[in-house]
Image 1 (tube, rainbow, N blue to C red):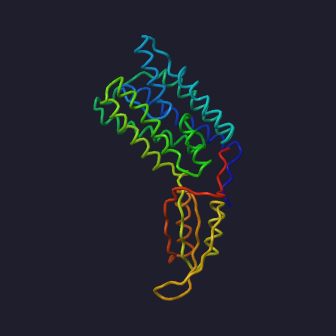
Image 2 (image 1 turned 135 degrees about the vertical axis):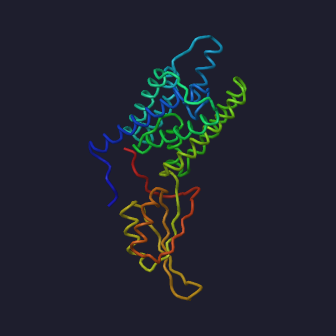
Image 3 (image 1 turned 120 degrees about the vertical axis):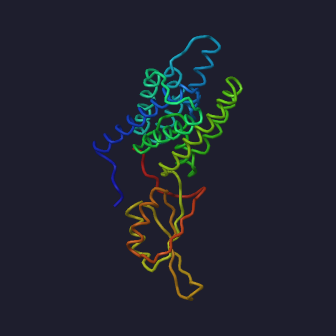
Length: 289
């Protein structure tokens, strides 16, 4: 049966993941990358940019939390209305905790090499966001919006964040210099690639499974993912014999769970996994709460 995620153990795990991921995120941004003047993606980078613009124009440094928390009110509303209350409350916990920690953690220097800071800072940033996502929560801002797009329209919403980040970087480059903006591009790219590698729940894959044990394999798909499948019957051109093929769309992380089970049932099964750019129709979505 598909794994149930309920009870105080699961909720405690979610809170732990949010606190751990947010602390890592805040330590990386408030100290490591902020010292180099780099801008992360999403509302975090936009909040840091606004903070610096206000300081440059008025000479007054406004705390990061006083900018970032109000900005996240719209994503929080979207989360409560369309995604889930517990999901949004945990994301709000991340937003508030990150704001406090980024204001409190002093800047520190590990290296003066901007390229190293951009690459490894991006990797740490992507890892921190992935940890929060593993607890069925986000760090707020564009993460909530991208998940809303993923669940509402069946598309990888994280790619749409790039347009927002591009606008932020163009403003930063025009005001503070293009070298800093270009290093921030490297930071954001490393962060995005790390996120896509570690967290693949919202990436869809189509599985084509040719096997003589399609009934047993279908039961595994149902039990592990709660997704359905379609059975096709055809003729293998090489031997001219009847062949059966299962067609099913699952998430990328579910593919990794299914492949070993399929090999156990039928070591001779032929499996083709293809990335699904867009899907329409009914598709089971695991509840965030």
